[in-house]
Image: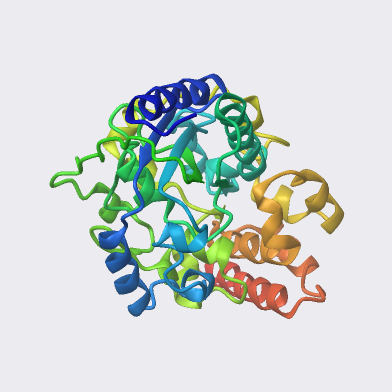
Length: 357
């Protein structure tokens, strides 16, 4: 196919329709000029807000310069896919139940990386059927890609004060994916910002990790502490984690734009193994084999059994005093992991102090 403006405009329209047919809720096209996003990223890194996430700076500017990551890239096809598995009221009920284990809702079902990557490949295959060979590479949170900045440029939403992407008609409960391509497709209008004077996400953050609008200090973020951090959780932050054992959704739950969010139709994103309604003591009792079995095909698997126990021990330390909890913690004292033992001991001290009170 000749790369005339008319041909590319027709192809772009087809790509968006094919994307919807494949189960994406929206498809947009962006150019690769991320100058402003690069400045923001450099400032964020200079402030050490990335914590131990060394991969955020390991690739230099490949993250903000798509044609360096994949030579020949001219455009980025950006897609979003809704994943919300249940209503916000149900999530709040779980958070308020101090015996419950709260898991970020994006991780309740099948790992989104594989599902979305498969759909993006199907989209690329469909483009190939139409025009023949073309240069491309698909990404789903799998390489140094500024996915939110690209999605904003592609018109899928704006980056909110909590640093998540927000869509006026769909809220923020969705995944993002990209196809880098050498096709000179027409680009979409970038999304405009609609947070206004609202600061609900800053005020609700349990650990005050949103240090300023559009600035998140990952070192304080519960998602970072329970997922990305490999070592011990800083003691001063443990009480702020509450019963959140994998990630945190508070800033999304409070966002007024999420009143427009829709429940997902993707069955693969629905909860598995009652992960949306497990109690802390139940999941703390899992053996390593239980953990591996019940997190098979899940994003949760990546933190491993040791960090899983670390997180739950903290949540049990934060729970109201309970002899049952104390006994469960004592049973884990012989665990071979020094990190698990340290967090279990901390939790026992918290429980003992509550009993003394």
